[in-house]
Image (cartoon, rainbow, N blue to C red; front, side, top):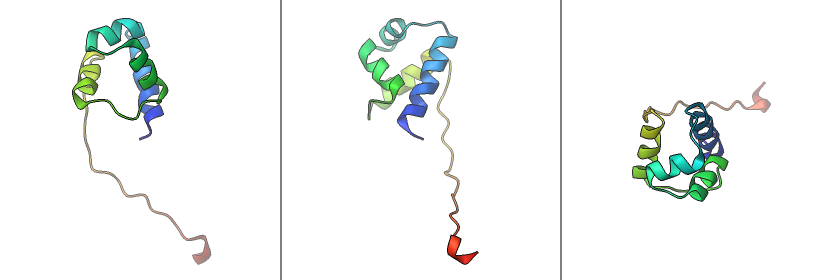
Length: 78
């Protein structure tokens, strides 16, 4: 999953909870600017601890599942 998709989802969930960036950022111990970058997909890494705090503050949890194969087909074989 691309960072911007994660960020878009985080922003949507934050707005559903009627939380400002400032309030959510303070709640999880990061700056508002860092949260803004995360929501825009402009940050390439945050700690797992911060990510878990973020999910917890939004009443979500992380679920890990096995990646499903993506099959390409060869146009030349048609």
